[in-house]
Image (cartoon, rainbow, N blue to C red; front, side, top):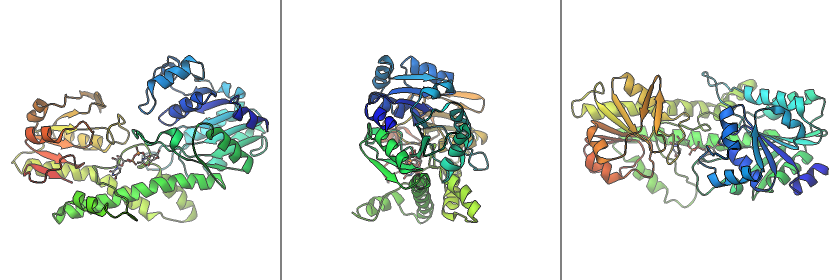
Length: 431
Ligand code: SAJ
């Protein structure tokens, strides 16, 4: 098997299409494993940064990127023509939703068309972008077979879901098992040989659809459980029960329980997005995925609920949002990362500004914030900054937030992330 030998010997030339938070870590890891990797991205900025050894993804080590660029194991281009020399082609482009929460599969479609123009015989194509079951065969295979090559014989085709947990210090590309679903056994074996050269474990399933569904199950599991705990948090609040204490107690159960935590809403580029790829596809089968829809509704409500919490907090000291100085602590969608995508903090901030709040924020991971047509700069996290605010709203639990500093210097605190563990404060309003 020529391609298999090339992979074993690291002679296979690898193209990674889409150099974002999935594609760049993968490109660097494959390059570190000894493959000659060419990243393809439509953005000049990304291509230039990479070719100058400049990193822009938090989960990639600057030195690693610099090293593989310096030793010429990684380069970036914009032009798809390079595909004609490639043996392994991995698609890591976005699969977003449009404003009606319907899949926008155009990036995958367009890239598949480009690959079809240049693909050579006996190459391996892998789709990593999270999508609905059927995409690999209905979109990628259909487009690439327009080249005249037959999937499974003339080229090999696999779906292998990306599994990236931004900011996770323990689980990186190399130690997160890789699920692989090929359109035939040879496809799966080749993908397993490729990933197996820099990922500790691979897990082969019987088809791309199983692999596509696996990824969706992982993320639907999260969105449903996060929305469930958000709903219980709303109820517990009304019942004057501390939901955080309840979760801590339930977590003592050594089996059959996994803690999820209430929050200001659901951010990130995966959990609020991916499940709606399945609910959309399900309609083709006259099937309505009610858990996903309900989860989406509850999570979408949380930012509004947080704004009402701020209103209640200010009301308790006879103040209105209008004209009050509100300091938001944390705008990233989760702790200790810089990513703003779908961040619930942004929805909350826009609503507060619309209500007349005098808004400022601190987020050491996000030095400046562009909202509508204004640019805000992150304030220093100091006693002075806290004292100036009429109300401090904690929306992201970055590790650097010091509970005592906040408690000792804030007039009012709305805490959506259980940063303030003390329960004896009458100026503290919590989820
Ligand atoms: N969140 C809660 N309560 C929780 C957990 C999360 O409110 O108990 C919120 C977070 O604050 C965040 C959002 O949900 O706004 C999503 O958080 P997440 O922990 O699911 O992390 P993501 O979206 O950055 O990455 C996830 C991966 N994370 C984990 O498994 C912990 C994983 O689900 C996927 O590998 C990845 O998305 C992906 O690429 O799909």
